[in-house]
Structures are given as C-alpha cells and as structure tokens.
Length: 94
Image (tube, rainbow, N blue to C red; front, side):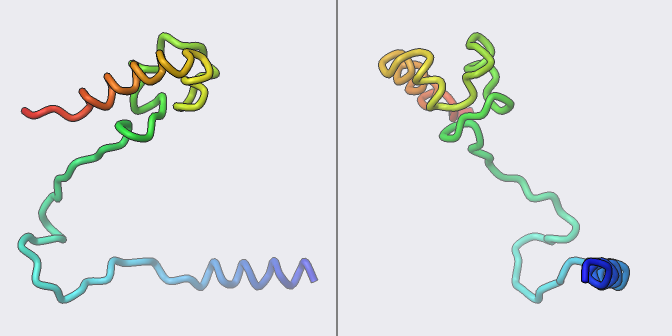
C-alpha cells in the first residue's frame, strides 16, 4: 500500500506542468505584466513582530516576541504607553 502510494505521488509530481500566470482580459489603468506596482505595507503597525519592529523588542528579554509577552514583561500601563506611542508614530505624512 505504501509503495503504491509513493509511486502514485511520484507520478503526480513528475507529470505536473510548469505553472504560468493566467492572463485575464481586464481593463487596467496600468500594464500589470510590465510595470511595477507600488503600495503601502502596514506590517508592524498593528501586528508586532521583532523582525519588523526591532526597536521595540531589542531592549527587552529574548522571550518578549509579541504584544502578549510585551504586556507580561512591562505590565499593562507601560505596555499601553509604549504601544500607543508606536501606533501614533508608525505612519507619518511626508
């Protein structure tokens, strides 16, 4: 049974076609296939992760990795103060 499953899986992998993007006929205001699309990424604003916002996590112990552990380490009032300052300054007008 295991042998036949492995053969079927191998056959499936080797017979798969190479994926290619599907071109849709849509009215776009830019050439999707040849122009860069630029946007805004809000990662690190409402979902904190040490690799996105190291300035918040670097001064803290290594076990502080999110809002929950940040609040456990600093206490609710200090965590709220730090996070409010972060939220209010993450997006700025240029």
